Length: 283
Image 1 (cartoon, rainbow, N blue to C red):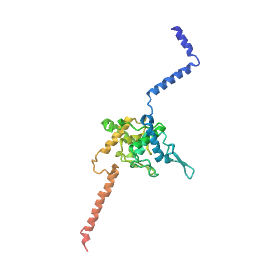
Image 2: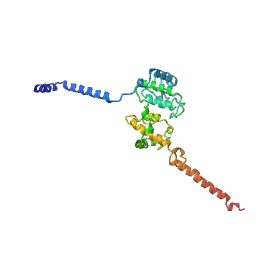
Image 3: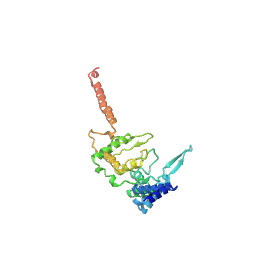
Image 4: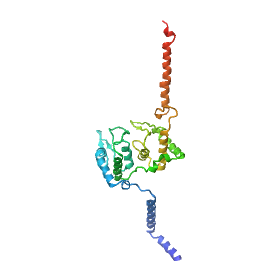
């Protein structure tokens, strides 16, 4: 034992001992990370080769004119020499971004505008899935959420309260406290969340379309996203106990009702009294 300890002590002072310890530490760290860290989903895991090829053909016909033949984007040059994007690159946006934009009808755009409006979708569900598979095959990116993260009816009261707290803290500035939407600068707007599918709400948080910030799964876990979706769907299904909601735009609606209807009726009644009073009948 004395000999082995002395031998190890001598070897420890070797010039290459530090490099050997560093190499072993890196190997152990890399192995642990590879075993624990989640793997990025790839197109091969979610779609077949035929779906990817079908999506590529659809992309070349309906999307390449704006986003480039290889989804690299189309760069334009203005009269003043400044560069811009006619269509942004799609490499790395993931299947979730395609499913949201195409599934809600925002893409393809009917005309150039500050913001792509929601409209009837131009592609079937199968075609949308094929387009998403092709874009996902180009580079890793956010994937379409699993069904277990869309079952908002399974969220309990505590989870619903947590989702409401997050929504009121981070989303009401643009979407209103009940998700009714609102105006934003430069001709843009936060759309209403009423009637939006749970899948598309999740994908919007995950990909950050238009001017919306990105809430990745590292920032908000899938379980927390589910709670936010549950809150949005719950408040959209609540009845209007106060009568006409007026779009759920808050006290502005009550003020308009008071000015136009209540005060308007009083002014009209006062005019009627003036025209039909006793003095007006005298010659």
